[in-house]
Image (cartoon, rainbow, N blue to C red; front, top):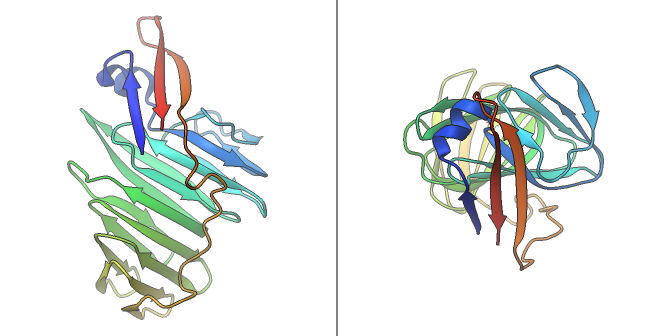
Length: 224
């Protein structure tokens, strides 16, 4: 479970830094393209702040977890995955979206205050109010979504047909427009790469930034 401690008001984050997320764990080879300057860097250290339209591309041994700063919703990015992080900042809330072109993610989405948390692929759109699920995105053939809790509306973008993904079910949405849901079977769930799954102890991440008044501020995230 993650607990966030702020030493300044949440509104200060939203309107001064525009930070929408932060990396809380990473390993292996990862390419990170920051939207503000368009430059690509190698590696994505813990504590890296994330902004709207940043791009993350994990390689064969790459893995990362990022956390949205408003409500602690988190996304695990598995190896060989490319995605764009998007967040529209509203007072007290971030409207969240990730665009996955290819690869595998695991999302733990807290109950959203307003708009759905959406995952957009070349084939599908997954709309979430609050739940846990896997998404396996294949840009050539289509997608597989595995529900772990709650409910997710999966829409095939070719036909606009929508199905409900529930706990212990698997939805297949293909490039030919077909979509359906079946009970999850052995082998449907991807392997979780998180090397620290189940580890205990508290760590602290500090993100410095400068607000519009030129004052130095700090976002403190305590993870336990």
